[in-house]
Image 1 (cartoon, rainbow, N blue to C red):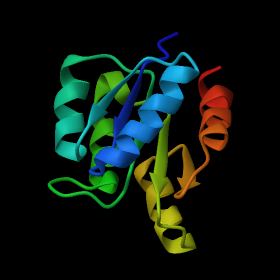
Image 2: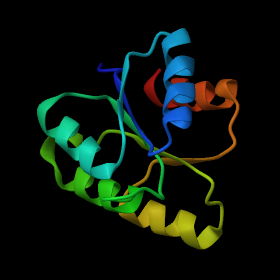
Image 3: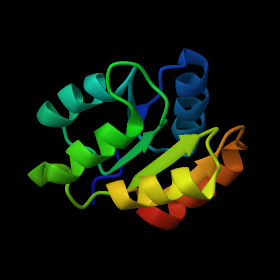
Length: 121
């Protein structure tokens, strides 16, 4: 099983925090600065999971999730949303787009890793 994770967030600080937590837990990962950058990486590389923010320039998380769900190689991989958005309306929109799970920022590394481990094993 592919346990490589694509971390998508327009905040360099958040990308680094998530990446460091994943590194420490032994999950290989790569970063993307927005949804468009993520789609480019998804078209040429293989990942077992995507962790994405919602509010990003160029292509937001909703657009990324919808497009990833239409790609053969990413149609069924888990997509976790990591965002400051916590309203039921936004969560419902994420679920409708195809999100697997939702984590609200600020997050604790152990909380994130618990969800990753539960999903990826």
